[in-house]
Image (tube, rainbow, N blue to C red; front, side, top):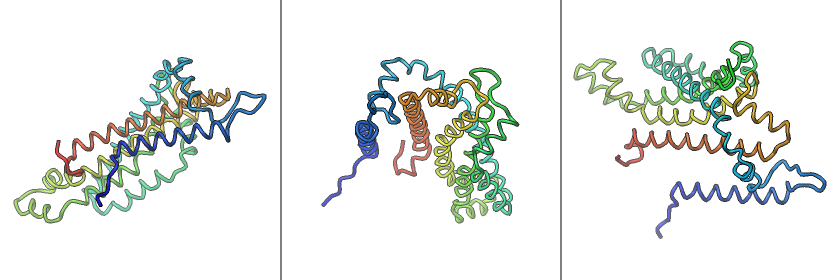
Length: 268
């Protein structure tokens, strides 16, 4: 009997519908509004929709997201750039692989809240209202390093030995091996690491803003809404963050499929 395979997009859509239904059921049962109060920690999907679109708060979403997205983007470029340089350094000096890998592991294991507190003291926050926070940029860069370093090193080492030998036999240098063989072999692993770093950088930027020294962005907005016990507002910002991270992750995934069509077995 032939097995019917559900497309990835359909499975994701069904999963999203199931999550919304479960959320709605919990908001009406276990987390329903108690008598004598209007507060509930888990508002219904309709309450979130009303906060965003009926009350018109969606109109100011870009003003909230712009400093955070900017910080995440800058941190993403810095973090992944440093990670790729470290991986290239390992390729040139193979004996340094253990040291570089340990540096990446340490960057991953550091308590980000403690590091963020030091960053606020050393780097500060936003220079002016609307600017990205220096701490948010630093944390966004920091959380990108590990996955990209590991992915790039594994990718660069995955080159076929016989292909490298062919380049050597025909008089090619190490640089020729890098351009003709190693980079092509490493491209899927590097691009996958860069894709994973997209939501990671966004999370790092949000955590950086949570530590203060900034007046605009997702972090201070969430702090304000939490202080007001505005559950619908907090959930709305959370859902917008999730949607943004998923869309950004998906867009990078499309780039990965376009650049490396041989991985999925399809040609563009």
